[in-house]
Image (cartoon, rainbow, N blue to C red; front, side, top):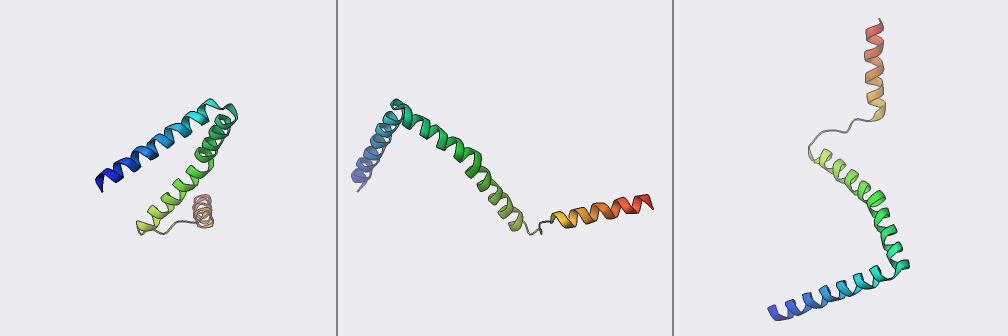
Length: 83
C-alpha cells in the first residue's frame, strides 16, 4: 500500500515538472499562465480574503455595521456638536 502511494506521488510530481517545463519553454503558454496568475491574485484572492474576513466577523458574534447606520451616527454627532 505504501509503495503504491509513493509511486503515485512520484508520477504526479514528474507530470507536474513536465507540465511546468512545457509551460515555461513555450512563450504563448507562459504568457497565458502569468496572465491567469495575475488575475487570480488580483480578483480571486481579494474576494476570498473578504469572504474569510466576513466569516470571521460573523463567527465573533458581532453584528456588521451598515454604511447607512454609520452615516446616521456620524451626522447625528455632527448635528449635536453644532447645536
